[in-house]
Image 1: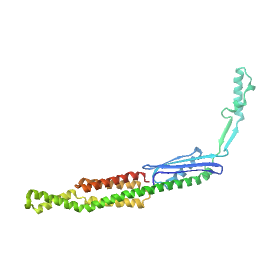
Image 2: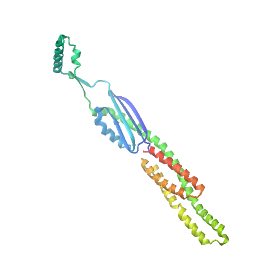
Image 3: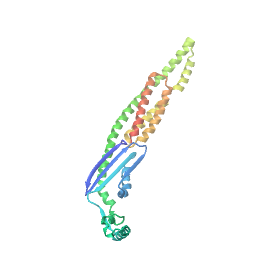
Image 4: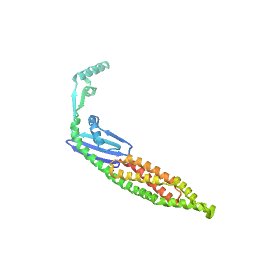
Length: 289
């Protein structure tokens, strides 16, 4: 079980290039990967996205990669023909203003667009050779962070599940007492009204009618089944977040029904405890991948 929150960061100098990689994630209902790269590294985006998606199932993931070369990759070229055109045009303006064209500063001509051209030669695959080692280290650290927090989440979820299982066991143990209490209640009312002339068959009929209305046997069976499914998800599913939420909805339905049928304070207290534990599980599963 993994948490949806994690963080990893590393920076390193690799073959004259300073590389920094930051990877972080927060909760999200779905998988959402955002990758920030320098424009010249955009060819690497799909490769990085695929590597992340293969090992991360759910969460909002942000990856930022920065590179800076210690030596310049720029190539500067001059266009003398364009410079001559600019010089001629500026000379015409100087003459019109009564100035000598010989006074035109060289810097003025050089500053004009197209006179000097700067280009950078970038090879995305060459940069990948420098980036990949740093990225893999960060990715493993990021996954370990999610796994470590996931173990803490699992321990908390299992604790709440144990509370739910204790409540379900209480409901199971209390059910025969509930049926006996119904019978006692019906008999007491009949004897209060009819004394020793109370019809035992009538008492049994009324008791059966109450049991049909208030019995919680089916709800208890289904609740146990849902709790077994939860424990299986906790132990066997590496990414159980969405499944946990669905099972909790079903378990909540059974607990609500038990609560609506309940006539006893002891059971009512356990219904409240069960709903509290289940709500904690539902909230916590929002942090689980």
